[in-house]
Image 1: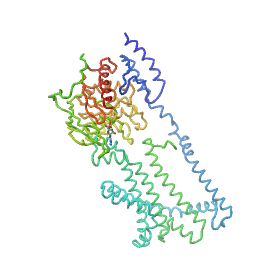
Image 2: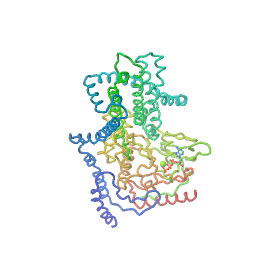
Image 3: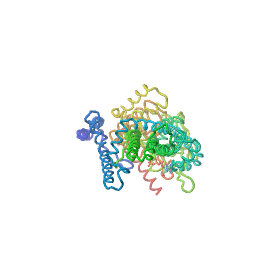
Image 4: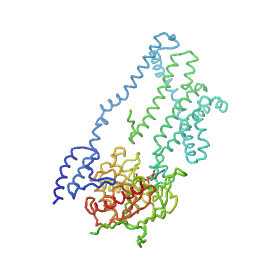
Length: 338
Length: 264
Ligand SMILES: Nc1ncnc2c1ncn2[C@@H]1O[C@H](COP(=O)(O)OP(=O)(O)OP(=O)(O)O)[C@@H](O)[C@H]1O
Ligand SMILES: [Mg+2]
C-alpha cells in the first residue's frame, strides 16, 4: 500500500525538527502555492501530527531568555552600566583635555578662560555650599511648570487641529512658523506684556515648547498605519475608543519625539529668559550666570555653564531617552544600523 | 462520495430558501478618480448562505481584498449594494495587522475588550484560542518577536475571538508550513461545523479552496469579475492530499488559466 510507504518516508523529518531550536520551521511545504499543481504526499496522519507537536515544542521561548542571562544579577548590571557609560565618560574626558589644551596654548589669559581643573574645583565648592542646589531648584521648577503648561497647550492644540481639517490647513503653517521662530525674539513682547516677572519667562517657555509638542502630535497621528486603524474598526473600536486604543498608542513614538524636542526648546527658552529677565530675589541658574559675567568671574561662569549642560543632558537621557528606548524596544523598533 | 460538479452558469443558480448571510448586488469599486481610476471590482453579484463556507480564488490584483474590505464595511462601493446579515463581520487581514504595542495575548483579547468582556472572561477565552493556534507559550511576547507564520496564527486567533457570525479571511494561511496549515484547516473546519459560522475565505491556493469550501468562486482579473463558481460536494472532513480534491483543483486551475489567457 503506497500510503504506508510514504508514511514511513515522513518520519525521518522528525529528528530534524527537533534538532533546530526556536522559531517557525519550514517543514518543506509540499504544496504548490498559487496555480502550480504538484504531486501530493499521501495520507501520513501520525507523523504529521507528531511533527506538528515537535514544531510546537521547538518553539519553546526559553532559549531566547537565556541569551541575556546577566540582565537581573548584580555584576551583570554593573557591567551593563559600564558599557553604557564608558563612551560618554571618554567623550567628556576628551572634551576636558581639549579645553585644557586651549588654555595651555595661552590663547587667552587664565582669568578670562580658566582651565577645567579650576572650574571643576569651583563647581565642587559651589555644590557643597548649596548654591547650585538652590539655583537648580528655582530653574527646574520654572522649567517643569512651563513645560507642563506647554504640554497641556500643545496637546490640546494638536488634538483640535488633528480633528478639524479646516483649522489644520489654516493654522498648520502658522504653527511651523511659531516653531522655527527663535524664542528669544518673544522676550521684548513678553516683557512689555508681563514686565520683568515669572510670567514673562513662563510665557516664552510655553511659546517655545508648545508648537513642537503640537506638531509632534499631528505628524505622529498622521503616520499611524491605516491598516491598524482599519483593524481596530473591524473589531469594534469607534470614536473615542479608536483614539484611546489604536491611534494614541500607535502614535506614541512620534509623540514622545515631539515631547523631547519640546523639552529642548523649553530649556533653551528658559535659559534665555533667565538671562534677560533678572528677578533679583530668585537666584536661578540664569541669574548666577549673569552675575558671574558682571563680576568677571570666569571660573563661576564656566561652572554654571557646566550645570546647565549637565542638567539638560540628564533630563534628556534619563527622562526622554529612557522613555523612547522603552517604547522602541517594546515594538522591536531598535535601529538595525546602530 | 459525490463528484465535483462542473462549473455552473450563474444564471442557473436560483435564490435558495436558506437565510442569506451576505449578498452583493452589482457591486463595483473604483480606486482613485478620473483617468487614473482602477476598476477593482466590476458589477459583482453573489450570495452567501448562512453557515456556508465560500472560498474565493483569482489572480493577484483581481480585487479579492477590495471585496472583503467592502463586506467588512471599511470601504463603500462605487456602485451597487453590499448586504450583510447580523452585526459586524470579523476580518482577518492579508497582513497580520497586529498591534505592535500589545503582547500576543493582549492582541487576541482586543476584540473581547471592545465587546466589554470582563478581564477574567477574556483571559480564559484568549488562552483557549492561543492553544488552538499552538502559541500558548508565546502569550507574553510582542508581535515583532514572532515569525511571519506565527503572526498569522495570532491574527487568526484574534479574528476568531470576535465570534462574529460572518468571518472574512484574506489569504490567512499563505505564510504557514504545510503541517501547521493542515492543522488549522482541520481546526477551522471543526469550528465552522460546530458553530454554524459563515466563512468567506480568499486564497491563491486552489487546492486549499477545494479542501475547505462548500463553494469556490472564481474571479477574473482587471477588472475583477465573477466568472464561475463551483459547488464542492466532497465529503468532509477532506484531506488536501486526496485525489478528489486534487482533481477538482485541477479543473478549477485549468479554468483559471483559460481566463488568464483570455484576458491577456
Ligand atoms: N487603495 C487603493 N488605491 C488604488 N488602487 C488600489 C487600492 N487598493 C487596491 N487597488 C487596486 O485594486 C486592484 C485590486 O486590489 P486588491 O488588493 O483587491 O487585489 P487582490 O485580489 O487582493 O490581490 P492579491 O491576491 O495580490 O492580494 C489592484 O489593481 C490594486 O492596484
Ligand atoms: Mg489581497
